[in-house]
Image (cartoon, rainbow, N blue to C red):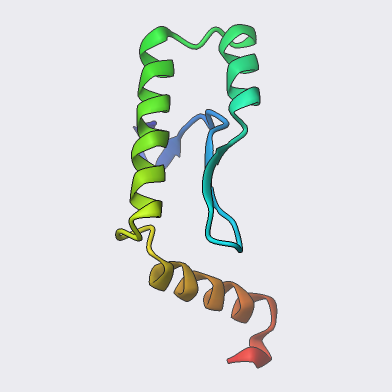
Length: 89
């Protein structure tokens, strides 16, 4: 991520940590990450850091730690519902 004046630029490295409705937690899009490592030429340090970060986030989600806990998620979901339907307030 880089900051320049009032702009932030970052690259999505494909790895997503997902908590399913049944409560299971997994890292999604590892296949895209693997493909893009080669096609986009990710440096080895970036690959290692992305994997380590995804693993750390997965552990935090599984442990229901802030800011990845269910209470925070519920507040964001409620905000999204309101933004889609202001009558839901």
